[in-house]
Image (tube, rainbow, N blue to C red):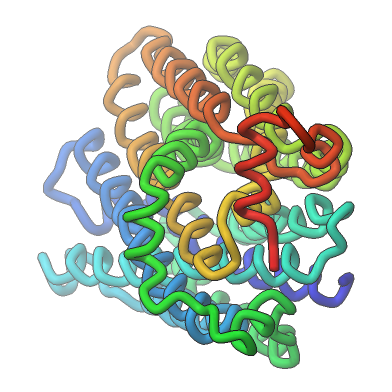
Length: 438
């Protein structure tokens, strides 16, 4: 399990590095370089629009790679998705700016961002199932949380590299070529990830499906026809976590540097400090999910986010590094309380024959609802001289929506559900039984 957990963590870290380095670049430099004829606000919105395209591609990627995972195995998904995302990210670092090739520049940027999202849409499902389907039942939440540590590690790699370049280079050097270096580094990281995953074994659940001939012929069709309500609920449930994360890591960076005139290096350092603490909390929250259930952790996390968004905006407005870091950390702790357990929760909601597709599509649908829109919506709401309370209201409302969706989902943790079984055990036990692994 440690070897499998390391392989899954490394892969998600590398792929999310690719995804996050684009978001940071979009907040800092892509607007003026690729949309120079726009006003500063419109240029930032356009850059965040290309950022959002990656999220729109993720459900498509999860459907394509989910089909591969449910029909041909989880292992091929891990290799192909990592290669696709790495190549697309290197490509972004090579795209000439608008001043060199005109309108072709943002078009190429859009296409490569789409390919990034396509690869990442397949990565999460394969990485989570690698650990969840190998893990012992009573520790499934803990082991399945390792792919969830990958995103903050990827974010720290991305922002750490940009932070170092930002500190070492002048503004002119960073804008001219320095921002490209993290994209080029993605090629080396992808090769390292492929090396780590080269000897990963297929999961026991998929081997059992293959041996008994119970694989789904059209997993996406089966998921949509038979589990459409579950898909919508999981997408809505995860939307607030995505929204809070990208409000903290992407929108606040653009807002503070442009509206509050906070130094770029200071903002990157504050955000990174909060993300480091978030990563350390992830396995602890996952252990609580194994002990007390997935659903209570998710409800608590959404409630924390709903309550904290107004203090988050108020602390950001102070421009004090310590207070801003506290604001970021409060939001991320609410988000990670939920996301630490979804690596086990989502696969447990679906039967093994459609699990790769169902879990991945539901997860990435939440990314569209929360991650794709939030930087653009928040940037538009914050266009003024006063405190952006509209951003706080938007994030709190989305957190309450997610809380309601989680409330309608069943508990799946076998350690919590099984003691309730028997006559009159209730709907949640029945739902968990239907989704039990082979």
